[in-house]
Image (cartoon, rainbow, N blue to C red; front, top):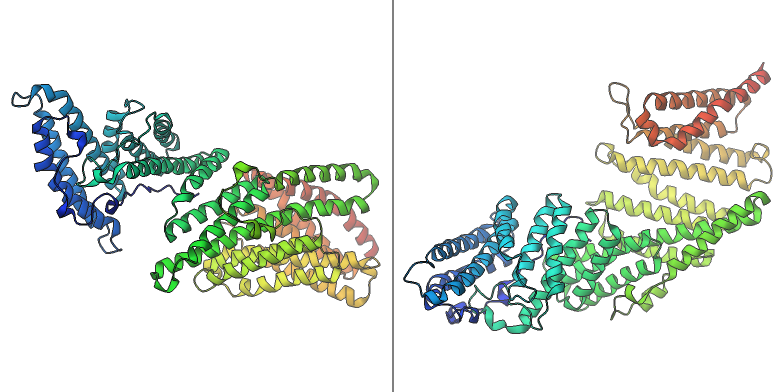
Length: 634
């Protein structure tokens, strides 16, 4: 779900206070009926008039447009609450005095303490909204301690669960996930242990004039919504705790509960984004059909709301959110397509290898195929509990198969994904969204690469790789490296790898050893290899050591790979023996540098263990080959 936990507890008071609050009778909630006359008079004469002012001001805070004083109404609302809290604290001190009706003292205290808890919660909530969590926590903690022993059927459990949610948010934002989990679990357990048919009273009923008139339906809605928020927060906390199975479970439970309550385009945007995000979890666990179902549901729900609104009548920021959501959903489809083609290509390549590889490798290949096909059984399974009921996605899912076993099937997935690339690029343009635009471009390149693995025709393979180079070369050469160096490096390296792959295809397609091929073929092969070397070198030269000659540890593996790529490219060139002898010596120098540097920097060595072993082996083998060349040249 969302990366950063945020409070979604806003209770819009227009649902709790009639539009014209002046017409509301200033009578206390029935909950106060068993209190003394003194408390009732206090509620009517001292509390409710301020409560009415608070309701108006807080409603203005909830609906206010952005301004230079975004928290102005929140501060005003908090002042009203603080006034009520001071009055309530004062009256609580008087409950033991002789003028109070003694037979009501305990009931009066209970009601006033309940009112005080509501005020503390609401003040704490506003403190958190205005980014003052250090002020919010003490208020909420007092409230929590006062209510944590409530019975499983207590009428005030909605308030208690709201307090738990707010404390959970505060501690999650502080990075204290375990502590956040404790409070949220308290709220979750309170809901699940509740044993009465009617919902607890709404938290605002006891304070806001007219709120009690909303009845059981409003209470049930608030009670259920509070629990949904609890699950929403728990999903995020489990994500931060790296308990991804539980995070996905709670995310799904949240989405199921939210689905019937999607009433606005903003609801649809949030639900659709979270449902599509959930697909990432299932995709990582090879549940590809479930991942597809999540994205399909996200798209159907989102587009069903688009048919109900007039985009031209929406505010500009809402229109932008709508267009971005379209692009975001498209990117989730692209990501899933990449995973499907990657997993399927591994099986496809293994089956091809089983027909061409030496017999001693067949057993290993067959085991790989069996493991992959077992994985595909998981990929295609969708259990009833995995589905979002009531959403027809059959037509959309039929266009997007999750297991491809041949070029025709892979091509269908590829075409669907390219449609999504167009949609994504419609929003993420180079002018304003450079990084996102390039990421989508790289995804498109990867899709061509994966599709080429299913393509039996040599010329078509080469065209696909050439298409990848064409789409990446322009941006990689035009972007300002001062601002987009990391993005450029990614493209340079991919271009270098692609040229190297094309050179390899040329070699593999030659009827003879490439060195004995037709001069035009050799010329083309050398041109591709030199282009590969050029981009490896551009990448290599963009990585500079610090003043002490040490490289950033996060860049050492890419640096080593680029050095290996440059050495391989030059060693593969079809040139005369004297020039090749020189290139082989240069390659040996690079390999020795890598071994020496990694030996001197153990932390860097851990980052490139497999490359280190290979380079060390090459460093040992290459001198004998160089000696043979030297003898030939003498």
